[in-house]
Picture (cartoon, rainbow over the protein chains, first blue to last red):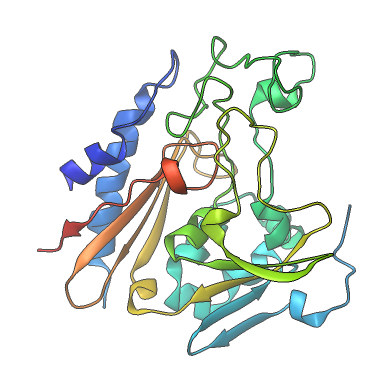
Length: 41
Length: 235
């Protein structure tokens, strides 16, 4: 999941005030994947 | 222009069938969010709606209008800023060197770093939805992912709609993956706030792989160069 999250943001171009979004976005992906896997079939 | 008085009932209706959903473009956000089938079988759609706007706005707003909403970039909205390639093509982008905390990190260009503010569109992307469009040349159906354009050097052109065309319906195909889908919206405030980051994920039933999509606030809903579809292995 970490590799997927990092790959998703490989092309990110942060600016002066929004570089925090890269890490935040990666962690959000991981959280989404974990929650999706846990959903009942 | 308010087109909610168009009397075609199909444009106001949510139809549920074994092969999927047909959601009229004039159905309200609230109607779709509260639909029991959507909540149970297409949770990413319901969640993306519940996390958007406020209940007052969801009652009034149509789904077709929602997907066409424009950016909340303050340099676009405030016309006192001359440099905005959306409003004034070729003038530049004031956000590049301005206060850009809420601006995009993915899918940007030197012409524009504005974000796409919608949530419902992300759910449609996650479930490979299509959109029916009606215009002077007749009707056509396109992948929803093809509705919004990559802005590149022409951020003033935001969609592939032709002049005079209307969105009439959204088509969402059924599948095992729709049941295990979700939407995450990370923002400064718990409600009534635009996202800093959004993520959608769907997982197949009984094994297989999960498939995330993210919106690190690109200029358009996760599509083409702005999305990274990654396969991960369920354990």
